[in-house]
Amino acid sequence: MEKRRRKSYRPMAELALLIVAGLAGTALGSSVDDALLTQARQVFAPLPEVMSSAKNPVTPEKVKLGKMLLYETRISIDGQVSCVKCHPMSLYLADGLKKAIGNNCKVNPRNSPTLFNAASQISAHWIGNRADVEDQARQAVTGPPAFGMPSNQAVELRLKQLGYGPLFRQAFPGDKEPVTVENFARAVGAFERTLVTPAPFDAYLKGNQGAINQTAKMGLKTFMDAGCAACHASPYLGGQMYQKFGIVAPYWQYTKSADKDDGRYVVTKNETDRYVFKVPILRNVAKTAPYFHDGSIDSLGEAVWIMGKVQLGKGLSKAQVKEINAFLDALTGEIPRDILTAPLLP
Image 1 (cartoon, rainbow, N blue to C red):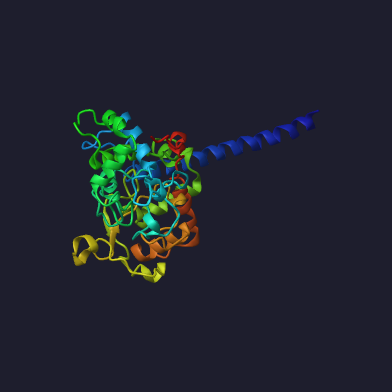
Image 2: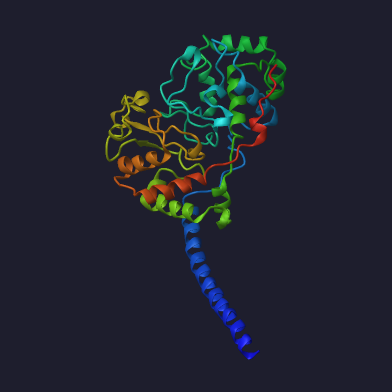
């Protein structure tokens, strides 16, 4: 009996030692994790519930109308183009093409960025030639490669003929003549300002350190320490500044782009803006290939490696790229079901 007892006690003692060792390891890991979270909170923040605008307050009536107008094809010159043609909901509001296709199969100048989490950027479009999402919607209806309508008046007449009048009056009750392209833009913009997709990274920033895995945490650390966060900061991880694409080396040497895009130089005619683009947001980036302004790269890992080379002058290792990719995966939010449901149009 005594021998049996000694045999049974020995595993218990070993188990106790393992528990103590495990607790010590947990404490050490927790300390490191706490430091990482503190560092991350100095650079990033959780997404807001709505990307509000003092110029265009979000109301339920505007949002309802804006969602309908986002799907409306009948205000395009060929009856085939709507906002969701270039920003389909099922593809995280990007279109998966190198460059967007507008009316009568016209190729747009640049890749379509996602509309999710995009309304609080410093501007719209890669080269910042639209002030905000409202300005983008306003100009799109008469844009030659977009909707292609001949004039604002033609758009407004079509909206009235389609029976949108009562909906515009509900959304803009103070306007004597509410059916205008300006109000079209405000309604679309109001809806876009609700397009927020909280991700595991948001839960992490709020204190749930188990919301992202260890590989993602290593990627977050590398992302910050390597210098990526210098441009890709804020709740949106980008969209708050302009930057030259190819600070260290010409971008086309690595992207193998067929054409060189002059970037914001097209807008400003300032030589210092040549090859300068708005820094894209990285929210849902794992779902919005292809990458860069010309859609020249299909692989997120390759895009990360190229950014290291041309922006930072660093050759990221395969392990570092894998870790950063894991972090970027943690930026993928779930698309709300009500957004995925197409509205009934007049």
